[in-house]
Image (cartoon, rainbow, N blue to C red; front, side, top):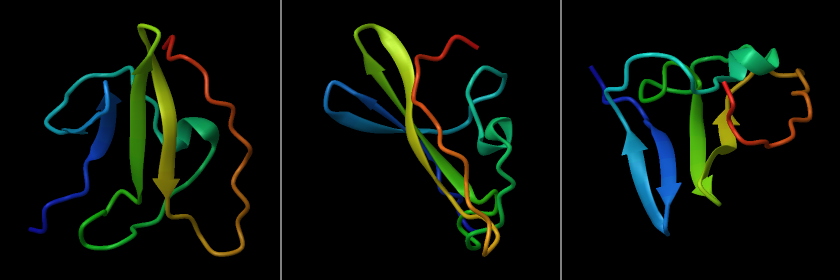
Length: 83
């Protein structure tokens, strides 16, 4: 099986991959009403999330997502995670 693209975490100028996490609390495109499509054999779930710590708060900094052609994704405001 192809290694899957991992979510990213940025802290103090360093980029880290988020892998092997179990549990809940981090956002996914589904929570914004976005249905993803497989982007490639290296990204079956169709998205990569980006998180960052600023002022001692965890933020969803953004994400890359593959959606069906002709679909316009919603506007999303980036706020601290309080999930």
